[in-house]
Amino acid sequence: MRVISFCADGIEQAAGRGFYEWLESQDADVICIQDLRTQEHLLRDDVYFPPKYNAYFFDNPEGTNGVAVYCRDLPKAIMTGMGFNDFDMEARYIQADFEQISFGSLLAPEAIDGDEKSMLRKTQFFQQLHDHLAKIRHKRREFVICGNFRVAHQPRDVQLSEENKGKAGFTDAERGWFDQMLIDLGYVDAFRAAISDDDEFSWWPNGEIGENGWRVDYQIVSQGLRKTVEYGGILKSKSFSTHGPLSVDYDYEICPEDNMPRY
Image (cartoon, rainbow, N blue to C red):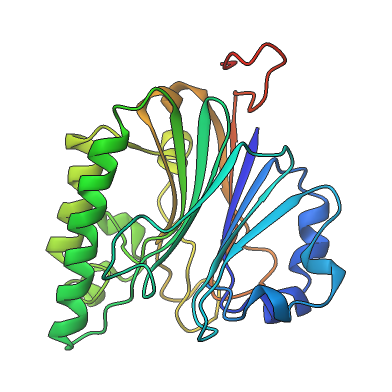
């Protein structure tokens, strides 16, 4: 299966830059999109609803943030939010459940340098997310959580790591939370399971690919999927937003005929 994650900076402007035309050639099974910056009922063009996908949105009444998940196969259920009452409007999450696997599209809250309140709120969000991930790892299913976590985990995930050290998205506290998720809870950074190269970035804050790159977009997967990861790639040859789409291929069937997972 192929899963694509993309932070759009506004899905309408990304569509105008050719995102959906590119998507047609990718043969993805699941597509997770974050930061829609609009509402579903305002998306009048059929381009936002490709005929070979089932599209689900969790937008914001104010037209900010918003997430979506596109599934080739029909999911059993769709879940919106994580039950974090203080954050389900500020952050965004939608999840598509299949028989043995779930796919989530996550947009974490943003922290601003020098703004202690926003940094505190982001820390509180990750504490609750940690508890959520600890709980669901005991479920008898696999998870693929895609999204813009707004955190760069390691120095090699920031092009100018020394200059950006301690800035929002690259603080010791945020990086420590990632360590807890990957080491203590046993989740897997799918891209790093396939690609160990340095200079692999998914976000360029100034919009210029190759300048001040950060890797803040992830596919975080449950331990059972570790050995199924076959390929990971970040699109850099085309620009649909300040983020590059992240594609990961897995040796796994979402809906096998006998309803048993295939590795």
